[in-house]
Image 1 (cartoon, rainbow, N blue to C red):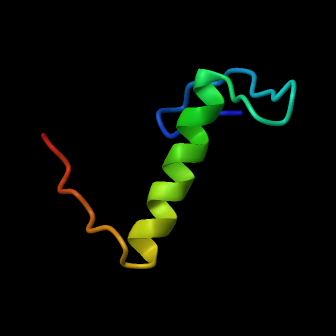
Image 2 (cartoon, rainbow, N blue to C red; image 1 turned 180 degrees about the horizontal axis):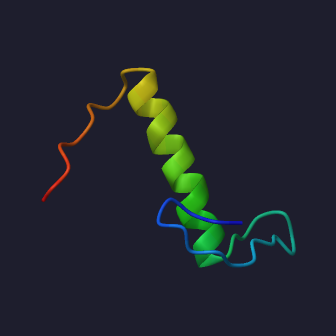
Length: 48
């Protein structure tokens, strides 16, 4: 599965609780995007 930067790695959960670092980044990004969409967070301007 790829994250927002396009990096593809394995995402697996052995015990249903602990994510790989890569999987945690993907889930974190999804949560942040949803919170911005729901106006819980304000979008940060992209740095150039």
